[in-house]
Length: 289
Image (tube, rainbow, N blue to C red):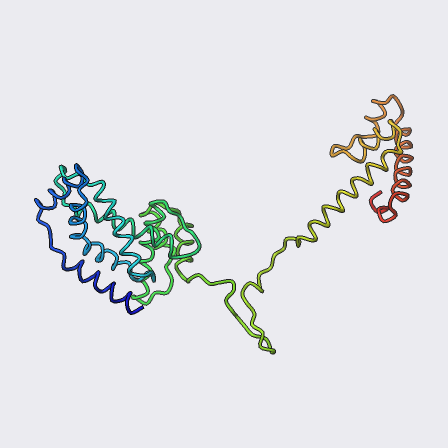
């Protein structure tokens, strides 16, 4: 750990000691890198701007992430800026690189600040960082919670919904908590975890499998039992008992050319035959007849 700290101090010291570049020097290095892919030119250009990376990373030190990691991410943004920079536009490289460095560090924070992933759109990023800053300001002023009016102002300014602002505020109000974190100990000293208090209303795997097997058995028993019915009995029973759109006695009688009373008698007889078949196939299935 001591060696790591020493290396980090050395890195920071060297970065802060790197010479500043005049506009002409900066442009010449950028041209050499863009046109000739001169690695030495790239090294000089980026080394001279590492103090900018460190300064921008320092603005985000309150997010609880390692400073060295944020500097590394900022360096990635610096290299991206160097690859896209157009010297002929007469814009200072530091001005152009600032956006890329900040964007790279912000992306790193959004990926690692919480195990719960939030939105990565530009609006969601703006909401995350502006809301964080505003919450810190309100805390300094002694306010514990933001009002709905403040939520509305932020939502309108950033272009997100009021619900998005409220949801993000809740996320920023507390750190992630492990489900395996201990919460209490019983009289015997055994420790409970948060996971132990989660309730899942879904059936257990063995219950699910059992239900599937039972359903298959019921379907097979019913199919076998229906085999004792003749064609007309089966047709009436399906229309009257096994169809979502139950057919009336009148409609069936008219279709079969018999009276509705005769249809009722055939249906009753078919049910008795079916019940008897179910009892003979499996006595425990009588309740389904």
